[in-house]
Image 1 (tube, helix red, strand yellow):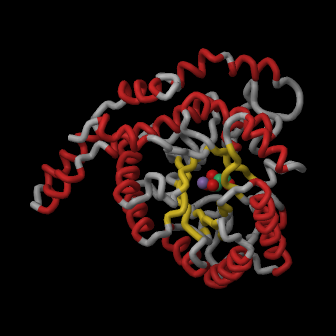
Image 2 (cartoon, rainbow, N blue to C red):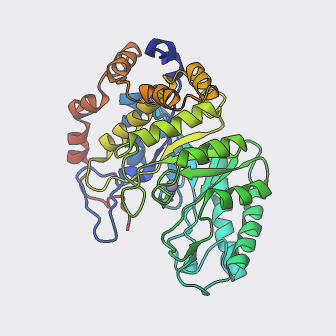
Image 3 (cartoon, rainbow, N blue to C red):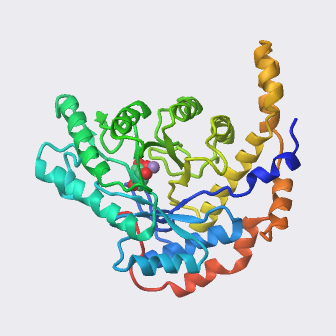
Length: 387
Ligand code: PSV
Ligand code: MN
């Protein structure tokens, strides 16, 4: 099997973007729990995101959500982030919290409402011009709840038209990524339910449009690594939203329940050329932390991605290819699982220490006193929250 020292250089430069909303309070439709130290401003969210990077070296960008993270002075926000050692990343649009969008936004039958949703996306691109963000990520809460409620085909046509108008405004160094989700908040049908629909829509737009694969947005049992392989083959895998879906939504810690799935996904990413300095794939988290502390929740998440990446890099691909060609079914399977079962935690701790990072970032954060400081300082104001 490949050794850790043979792959350690390939761990250099790995970057996982963290979402600003992970630092705010969140919950279910039953209850949103508050917690001490929760950010009240976007600047405080960015400060928390910077802690994740400080302890892991893995999270150099923070993804913003508009209008939740709207500010007057984007240049100042960018400088604030840079002062803390990170940058502003993907801009996420939001067309799911306005009464006008109850029956759809980019797909609505009313042209004025469609235009309002398009204008929101154009405003997001204006922000990207100022923040230097590359990606506009579109997740749509659109669909219907009842058979016959809407014209499924007509909605698909209007979606294509609205997306084309938005895409026209995407700059040369920018990209549009379209996320899919098979259910929720619409339950009979969603307008972008699967990778195929997202692919068809972005393919019609052009070279600067890609699919976003949120690991939580599939039916149980879906072979997600197959989708990864296919989208990379088609040159259309733009980004990941990593999380774990043992929940009605998708927001648990990536790799927490099924590290083998994350390993299999990372193996296909590497196999398909989606990993490394030339990759066009953005790796992001899309998570919320309802009952656990948010900053260590994010630290745990990026470490899980790094750990499964290291294990996936350990697969002896030469031996695997040979076993596959010889039809050695169980031999090939063993080569694959040998890498998965390799404990790389001590090697990764040493790798971090060699780079001036804490060997154990979870412990280093706990001992840093940051959590107590924000709990003491962030009193008053309105906590950032999902509601
Ligand atoms: C809702 O499912 C969701 O989690 C989507 O995955 C988006 O990426 C995210 O919200 C932010 O809008
Ligand atoms: Mn997502």
